[in-house]
Length: 273
Image (cartoon, rainbow, N blue to C red):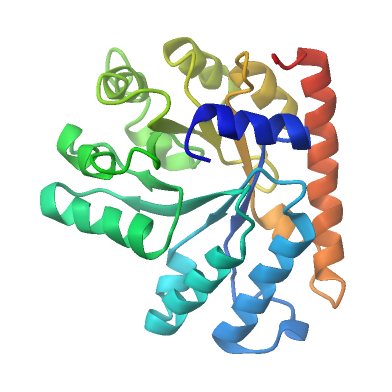
């Protein structure tokens, strides 16, 4: 998964641009999985087993694991190891520091965990992004640009041009579309279209479909490029489709519906070969 063509081949093969977020909330993990961090690990591995043929990527949210210290970190490492090689692993860490500190974050995510990509806040500029790319030509840095949370309006839409547009434009001076992706939230499709104008060749990681109310169809039509260019994330709607012993089958059914809907739009768009 070290270049756009490899991702695109998976999108073509699976007729899917689905990314599944692994955000294991212990209050919602089904009791059949057990207790404690062990239950969290069983739960995530079961989700991966049930959905990996439908998903192009998995996105573990590090906060859900880091809260349990070394035990949670070890569980995360085993979950990542469990994810099939053809699926991208995105460490949703949202790191945002500079210099040696950023380099250590990169080493932790890429060298120790074995993630393929990391989410990064770019608001300290080039020196908060460059350490994640230098020496990691086979990895991805995913910059926050247009997020799906309500508070995004506090900063991201202000200025002339708006801050999210400046992030998209300036960051493309720092790396190529084979090095950088952008987080572009699903809840504002009119701005996704603008993001695509500014970054026509880049992949977008798109959170906000499902529980947050983003429209899959609107996202795919607004953010599409000739190689799809989208990794659309679903977390809670898949993970917690049910809380009984059949949770994995329910998660698969939800993921399958998303994949089916994606495939229909892809057929309409006619993916380039």
